[in-house]
Image (cartoon, rainbow, N blue to C red):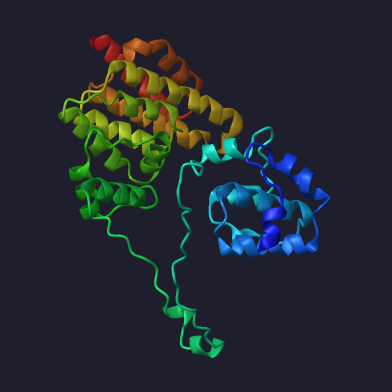
Amino acid sequence: MQGIAKIPVEISKTLDENYKVIKDQFKNEMLNQMIYSLLDQKQAPHIRLQFLYNIRQQDQNMCLSDLCINQLELNIINNIKYYGQSLEQILRQTDLLNQNKIEFSCEFMRPIPIIFNHQSFDYIQLDLTHQTVWDYSITPLMRFRHILYQAQCTKLQQGDHQLIVSLFKPEYKIDWNQFKLLVEQNPQLVSDLITKLYQLGVNANEYLDYLIQIKISIQTLELVNQLSKSISLPDQFLNRFIAKCIVNCEEYKINQPQQLTRQVRLVSVFIRTLIKQKTFDPKKIYVELQGFCLEFSSILEATQLFKTIKNAVQEQ
């Protein structure tokens, strides 16, 4: 350890400056002495930093992490440079210059893991592995979301139908994709949910707009028919929806002519039902309705619709 004192390290100089001074004197004996000194952990912080830097510069492949006692020393051996800073400035950044003692890291003792023979696992059978079952009844919202997911995939049982309607609150939002799937699988459920919003005095125009956006089908026609019996639908919504039904039939004529007759019959019966229930005033879109009936006059239901519209207008 007497040779350590001969290695010049000045705290006022940078790591590179000190390294250049001792480069010519650097020998294997000095290297071993510095490593031994680091193991002893009694050197001043700036001496330790310089020794670690010297060893790293001499041998880049040597593992020095076990010799480090703080993050700053780890930075030095990982080649994180502190250009233009003296050892004193580097130490001030971590407050090591003002510490009277060096804090040593401590590793927690851990038991040695037991190595099992593969034969120890022969009793495990994959077919006995069970999936985690989540309890959806923890909160009303979770129960609602769980049943709502089921309603998007299959037709609900009567008990689940009544339960989700009772759980539904205005703040439980249903997005467009969910709404579309609900209409396909459970149109009566959608009707009951919108009706409940009306009964609570909550604006349901968002969901009526969804109805305008989704594809016209027997489910959507059934849904609007059910809603017309339960609540007073806005005239603007009915006008837009029926106008879309007319346009939809014209698209069938071009894209799916084999299904045109069925679609015209469904739309014609649907509009006649609304007129007879006096929930829809045909006079407001009379031109569009008249054009629809004339275009598909070869279909019986369209002809009957035209007579119904004519009688309704005359009565007014």
